[in-house]
Image (tube, rainbow, N blue to C red):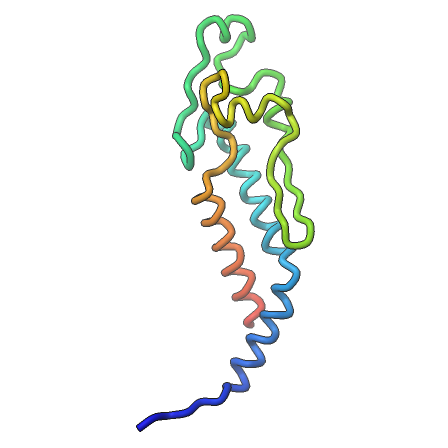
Length: 139
């Protein structure tokens, strides 16, 4: 005994609409980029990245004396303000062109202080934005 189903018109129509809308992923990518950029700004505000290692290692006393502040990775605000997003086509880039950022991100010669969200955080944000985006298309 069996039942044979050859496409359900309503579902086929919905899938067709979703397929045509999701070809250009600019909307969910831009929304994800804004949320991830807010995450990065939050890391600077709280002095750490909960998605990758937690609180940043505090500055050494000599560093605090030299810059006049104990705020980690914040001196002039150039690094903090340099992060941006670029959503072009189906690609999202989040980052900075500041040449010393990668040293701190990776801990190359300085304490590791990750400023970019972890892969898990990025995937979580993307999943939520795409789920919301597809839900709106379905309506």
